[in-house]
Structures are given as C-alpha cells and as structure tokens.
Length: 237
Image (cartoon, rainbow, N blue to C red; front, side):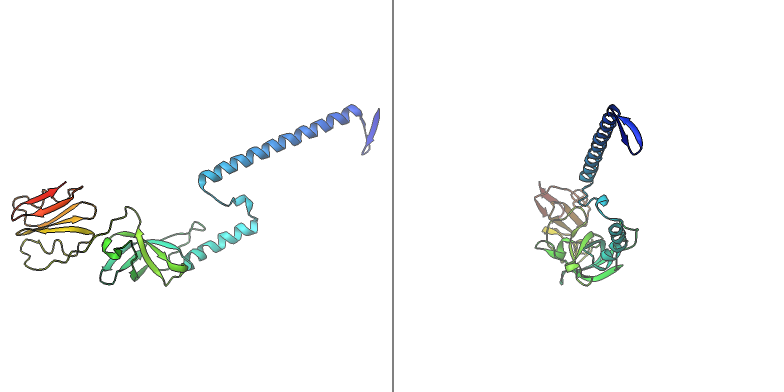
C-alpha cells in the first residue's frame, strides 16, 4: 500500500520506520536533557549555589549584574578591616576597612575607607578582647552605613579577659611592658618583673630578666596559674 504525504509517495513500512526513528530521537534527546540536568544539579550543589543562573532570563541576569555592586556598597551587611585604635572606656574602636570588591564587575564596595569610634559588641567583654592590629568583622545594623559595629574577629577568635592598668616605678619595664594589655585573666608582680596570664593560657612577661625570670616563661602556653617571686617565676601547667 502506498501513501501520499506532502506530495511524497511512501510505503507503510517507510512511514513506520520514520516514526520509529522519531521516537528513538525523542528518547535520545530526553536522556541527554536528563543527563545535563543531573550534571547541572551536581555542580550547583558542590558550589553551594541556590539559584541557577540558567533559571534567569537575560534581562534578570543583566539587572543583577548591574545592581549588585551598588547594593553591596550602599546597603552593606559586613566588611572586614583592621583596628587602628581602641577606647576600652567606651568600648569603641577605630577601623580601617579592606578594599572590598564586588563579585559582579569587580567594583569597589567599601563606602568607608575608615570609621572612627565603632561600638564593639563581643560576647560579654566587648572591646577588652581586642587589640590594635586585630583584623575584625564589622556588621552594619539594618544595612545602614551609619550603624557599624565590631562583632568579632576575621579568624582565630579570642576569649574574653581584662585590661591591665599598671603604674609606678618602671626601672626595668615591668610597668610599661604590661600596661594596656587586653584579654588577661591573671596577673602577678615580682620585684622588677611582671607576669600576665591571657584568657588563652599564654604567659606574657616583662621587666628585669637577669635570672631568666621573664624570657624562660614568656610565651608558655596551656598554663593554669602564674606567680612572680622576687627574682624568679612559677607557672602551673
């Protein structure tokens, strides 16, 4: 039996064969699409990406690319910087910010180069856990440029402690060498040397070292208690 399709003479066998080819091609396309979807899903999961870029229209992708740097700069959430000064009496710190860049267009997004007297809100000790030179994370409350606050360390967070205030005769640096030290949980004073124990259990020594009473113990870690004698030092590990 011969059929005329679109002006072309075809037998029933040829039509059946053509339909089989179309069905086979459809199955192959479906398998390829499924494979690509699985591969994309695996890539997105490994990258932690929540919204597939392929799920956006070109207009949406262009809009995000254009608006993201401005949103990051004018409605910031967090910035990283370095403490340049601390006021423990008022629990504030001056911070110089890193040159942060947006992932879109590599544009600078740190509105402030530096900011003075930023409130420090850290556990129950606030500014006393920090020192000049520490790298910190600054959060902007309600994404407001005028409401920054230091909330923690960029890496290696410190435990809370106290700030040392030392005064008096400073012949060997036993006063100036410890005055202003932060994050301290214990102190001890000898004749001409001083010992401090940090909240992390590390010893800081300053002053006369005639008998090694400072250099032999400074930097010791994992210490539970300290005692500075007249010309010697004792540590409890």
